[in-house]
Length: 102
Image (tube, rainbow, N blue to C red; front, side, top):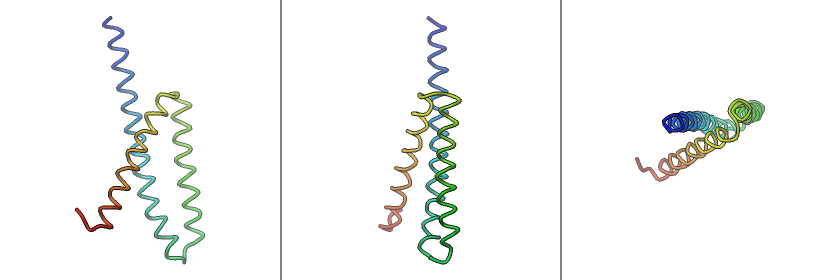
């Protein structure tokens, strides 16, 4: 019984760690998305913007593929939940900024 509880706690800790990793990947992704949007809207750096866009997408796909390969579906799902949490936070930050709220 104690071994089962220890195993479950270890698995939960690993899933939490992958969730935090996904949140970190998401935070970086959405921060660079803001930079990418500024490059697109300026119009002068179209080549750089397209290259950054592709790099950003490939980096996220590579991170998720590595997580799936190393740790399996549960870890991939946890990382994706973390990524979605970062997306929610990024959207909220943009909305607050647009409304002038703190």
